[in-house]
Amino acid sequence: MDRIEHKYVEVKGLKLHVADIGNDSSTAVVFLHGFPEIWYTWRHQMIGVADAGFRAIAPDFRGYGLSDHGVEPEKTSFADMLSDTIAILDSLNIYKVFVIGKDFGAFVAYAFALLHSERVLGVVTLGVPFIPPGPLVNHESLPEGFYISRWRDPGRAEADFSRFDAKTVVKNVYILFSKSEVPIANENQEIMDMVESNTPLPSWFTEDDLVAYGALYNKSGFRTALKVPYRSLLDERFEFNIEDPKVEAQALLIMGEKDYLYKFPGVEDIINGDEMKKYVPNLEVTYLPDGSHFVQEQFPDQVNQLILNFLANSYN
Image 1 (cartoon, rainbow, N blue to C red):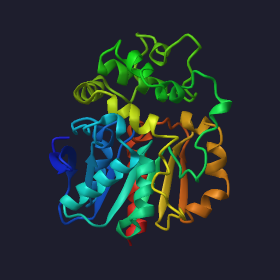
Image 2 (image 1 turned 180 degrees about the vertical axis):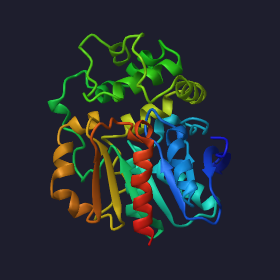
Image 3 (image 1 turned 120 degrees about the vertical axis):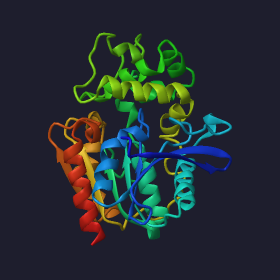
């Protein structure tokens, strides 16, 4: 961890935090986090690819971790996350990259591959496949207590989260998202109340890890995190206005078979159906049998090997 350098890049008046390891002249790999993550979620992968001769870059998205919020966090968009990523790479004089995205970072990664294909050597996503144009999730088939529905409701998540410190919120979300069932609260229950205070952390997530996450979210809070992804997910995911969304780059999807997201309505059909190949023709899908939503932290050695094999095969 001490080998990872930390710097700030100014983008549109915002100071955005970037974790960086590897030689400046090496082929770059940019890692894009999800929620409730920050750059730290990629700690194992950054060291792994750097040891293999690559340069690893992992920014905190605006409003996350050590990066500044926008002037109006509630207006942050997926497009901001993409343009910030491009600006960071430009500032670091990096043109071509491998792009790796986890959770909502996968949406940004695929938008990068679609809109800036000339800069993308390959794209890897974890936990989230390429979602074809159209409704993301059939919310009508899910109960009112579905966590995304709850967190899309302005004020409700803020009130729920405010009863706890940032470390406890992250702990509860990690516990919920590590399970194989979609988080759905009862009618008179808030999402945070789904986790008992004495529930242990997953075995692969240490108290030191939680302290690191808690400190970073204590700095950033959750204002931007609730906007992107949750309050942008259904409305703005296709704001990029891509007429022919076809990813030509080599692509890899890593899915944990026990990832709760796999049980979202329609997701299994998307991953296993033929339609995916229309949009990502060069896609390979790999499953980790016991993998949760956090495979990169749960099984770092296996995920590192999958990524390194992909980088080697795509680059040669």
